[in-house]
Length: 380
Image: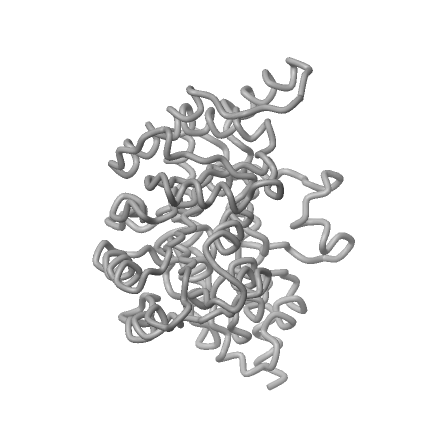
């Protein structure tokens, strides 16, 4: 048994999530890292690496790459070659590298919306135009608008599709039919598919299965990391799986002289997580599912909120239209919570709540919502 109920004081560690609202009585439930202590095998691997005392230029190695290969085989029945693995300093730099390497100035990049801010911003950083593919609610599940998807991917000069699967912030996991449709359209219109799958190891809904893009499409670029699942995002380490050697070279060339190698501590942490972290991850998913169900149950009691059950991630995407306020994010701040403002994702009437925390913290947050909602009703 692992203690996910432990509340760890992160003050004094320069944690972004907590420092942003330092000195204020706000529960920080915004940026997407969890509050869980990293698995002991990861901590031990880091300790052993630090005790060596030398921290010079470091590259990946065979055992690290085999840990990724084995993880993908065991989790997704995806057989890869270790030569397909390219190590990156993070998923966000990696998909920016894709835009840089596979577009020219004034080209178009398809991006689903809502989406987390770095992905929405990526096209403009490389002098490209974003073509937004909306997400719609069908049978209480968020999914891409298929008509918009087809229309946008056939646009002239649309060169890249930045996909986020599982979706952040919506929490949906693409079915094989949905992913196959995307691949078919990308191939038909010569669009490079780049799939950000950083939350793929956080599937919460029974019966839902993540399918890596590269498993179905050898011409795709699949971006993954151990960072979200095992709470090691600060170590700056991710990887791209690119089966096609020509596309692999094009990706590498795009980062030449600009993109740095991963943090050397990210290598042993990732290897330890994928080699020894399965039991920890299994309990984490059970804990997160209970947190997800709790926030779903409590917020669904109020007509002011609508929450669709997240199939994956530790993020709840909350529709606050029923509050009838101009700025739902500010409403939550006044309630004593600091979620992510939906405006940053393209939907001002939503907020994103991170429930990757101890249950006692989540219960405190939900009580604050209840209390503030009662005051809100009385003043309306």
